[in-house]
Image 1 (cartoon, rainbow, N blue to C red):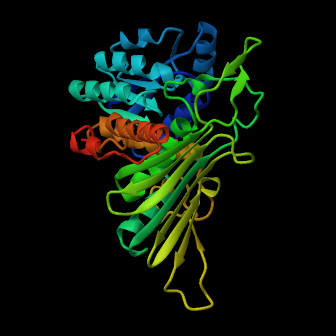
Image 2 (image 1 turned 180 degrees about the vertical axis):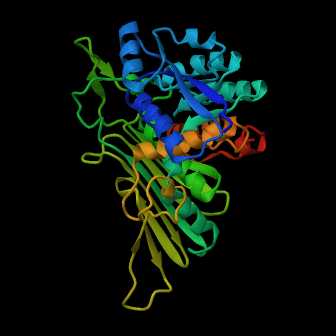
Image 3 (image 1 turned 90 degrees about the horizontal axis):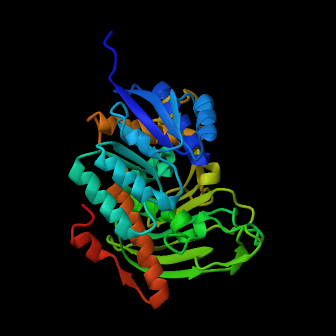
Length: 382
C-alpha cells in the first residue's frame, strides 16, 4: 500500500477557532478519503507556556511563541491563521511570501484594500487559500441551492438573511478587538456570514442600501475607564441581486437569547425555503403544489442522501455538528492543495465579502443605494 504524501500544518492560535480547526483536521482524515495525510506539525500561541499546553492538548509535535519561526521551516507547507482579525494581513502576506498555502478565518482582513493585497499576493505566488466560511459546507445549505437552481421554487421573488447572536448584549462587557473602528462591528463579524450565504444561494449582489446602528455607545476599556464605541451593534442592508431578486440581510450581536441564529428565507412563485442554524440539520420547504388544506412547511431532515452527511453518520436524522462542517471545509481545502479539487472559498472570495461589507457601510453613511457592479466589472472578482 502506497503511503499518502504528507501535508504539514502550522496553526496560529489555540482559542475557540483554533480548537475548531484542530477538530476539523482530525475528523476530516477519518470521514474522508483525503489525497494527503494531515500532519499537525507546529502550533503558535502568545507565550511558550500556552503554545506548549496547546501542543499537548491538540497533538502537535512542536510549539512556539513566535509564529514567524514556522515560516522559516521548510517542512511546514500550510499556515492556518486563527488569530485576531487585525493580525491576518501580516501573517498571511508573510506566509505567502514564504511559499506556504494559507487557511485563514474570516473576516479575511479588516479592510477590503488589505484583502485585495492578500488575494493578489496569493495568486501571484500560486499558493492555495481558504477563508473560513464553514456554514456554507452544510449539506442542507447545499440542498437549498440545488433546489433553487433546479427551479423547485419557481421564480425567486424575495430573500431574507440574518446572522444574530447575543455575545455583546451586556453593556458592561468590555470592548474587544471586534470593536476596532477598522473592520469591526456586527456587520463585518456576523453580517459577513449572511452576505456569503446570500450570494452562495442567489448569485452576485449588485446594489446595497445599508443602515448601521450603534446601540451601546460606550463600554469598559479593561483599564478602569470607558471606551467610545464607533462600530455597529446591528448592521442591516437591503439588497438587489444581479438576477433581479431583492432582499435583505442583518448582522446583530446584541440579539438577546440567540446563540447562533444564522437564518435565511427564500420565496418563489412555486414554493419557499426556511433555514435556521440553531436547527441546522433541517431545511423547511413549502410547495404551492400541495393540495388545498394540506399546505404548510415540511421538514427535510439531513440524511446520507445529502452528501457528505453520510461520511459522518449512516442514519438519517441523527445529525452532524459545527465541527463536522469544519471537517468538510478542511477536506475541500486539502483536496485543492493536492490538485484534486477547487478552492471552496479562496482569498478572492473573502475579498468579495469584505467589499460588500464596506459597500453597505458606505451606503449607511451616504444614506443612498451603492452599486457593487464596478467591483465585478473591473476584474477584482475573478
